[in-house]
Structure formats: C-alpha cells, structure tokens
Image (cartoon, rainbow, N blue to C red; front, side, top):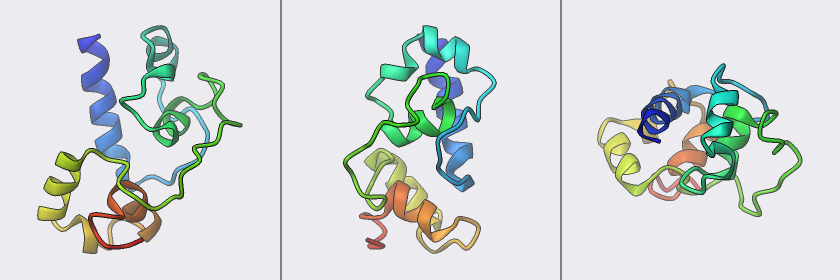
Length: 107
C-alpha cells in the first residue's frame, strides 16, 4: 500500500494544473485499481475520476459537491497558499477553486 500512496501523491500534486474530467491520466491505473485506489475515500471522487475514471468505471458517478471547495487536504491548502497558489496565474481559476477554493476565498 505504501507503494501506492507516494505515486498517487506525486501525481495529485503535479496534476493541480490539469483540467478535471473523467479519463485515465495515469498509465498505472490497472495497478492502482488492484490496490483499491478506485474505492479509496482518501481521494475525492473527482480525483479518482480524473486519474483513473475509465479503469475505475467512475465516469458516470456524481460527487454531489460543487466544483468549488477544499478538495485538497487542509495541510496541502495551507502549504500551497503560502507558496502563492491562490493568486497564481499558472493554475486556472477552476483548478484553484476545485483544490482550495474555500481556503483561497474563491467560492
């Protein structure tokens, strides 16, 4: 399981700049699927849909949440805010709203 956490964290952090959708962005989805990524609630449904939505059969699932809020952990938002995430033009407004929208006062 430890082998799964680090790659997922790296992909999640690097993927902040990517647009959310339902797809398989990772080439490791088959591996992650057998290691329970598809049902792992430590990741939001939107994250699981984005990285392995096709493999996990999550493309038609709904979150019930808006696309603005804190979908990253509060520790991540705190660190990202300290590094200028909320006002960075490198990330789209929708990405900033999705990951740390509440903490950045963007909702």
